[in-house]
Length: 64
Length: 203
Image (cartoon, rainbow over all chains, first blue to last red; front, side, top):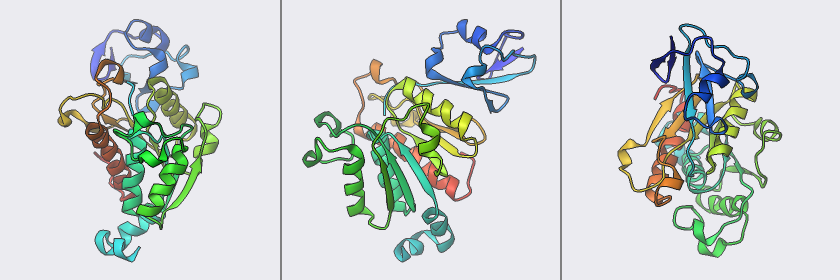
């Protein structure tokens, strides 16, 4: 299982891009950390989620 | 500066005065962050915005009616020079992009993300985390509308990445931005900056 924002989800084997496509997140409005390190935008298509990974997806809303 | 050292203690004031903090976006968040940091005696502020003061900014941003039409960088530098004349101010009147952000922000110890557009926020946060990994980053998301002040919080996400706001109140789904709630979020950001400078890294 992969922990996404603290919740266990079945995403092992998916790339970050593939996982995001199954969610409501807008890829243009997010930053993703995997096990405490930023996942570069250019690596979303090739970063494969492994069992025990912890993902933090920050989704930005407008206003400032 | 001696007056600040009396209030804050000489060691803490030395840390503040030796710091360079970049404020990206000088709207409701950035103008309030910059004023709080300048008052605290942060040594150098890099103020970045491409926009001019508009009448629709005055309900929440730290500008004056007489400054409508001026670049925000110049107007805020003028206001800060009256509030805290000992602050070293560098202004950059430009739009931050993926291509220029590393160069414009490379001298900063701490970067405040204070933009208004969600995609621009994500662009800046990703860019800083990818290309300036030694910098601290204090970003904001979710401070619009008339919701309770008590949901505005600060969360530490990565080793050097902090996020302030309620993370849900989008300007598009609310009545818009209200000065006091934006100031709350700006105050979270400014206080987080000062705590980092003080060596207090937890929230």
